[in-house]
Amino acid sequence: MSAWLALLPDAVGDLHAPATEAGHAAGWLCAWRSAARPHPAALQLDERLLTADGPACRISLVLLVGNTRPIADDPAAIQSQRNVLRDGRLPAAGPARC
Image (cartoon, rainbow, N blue to C red; front, side):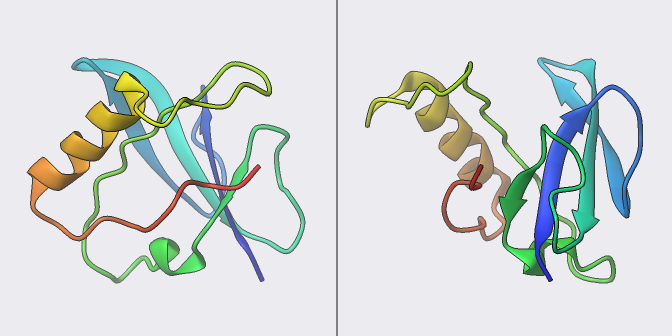
């Protein structure tokens, strides 16, 4: 079984939570437990993040356009890491896989 995450306009999937960007509504983070990719926009992630009775978490998600790759010191990726670390909870390791 795999776990998947996508930022979508509607709340679908096994788990979902409202997403914000700069304090404004930005759609829904939708998650699935599925062997196959449940949605074309879904990214694979560590299935331990989808434990509904586990501790609360904060997700800082940076999406790139198309098949581009970030540079090592990409400002968006660095700010994403800062946001997660500032929260004080343990971050999930590594980027999601396409």
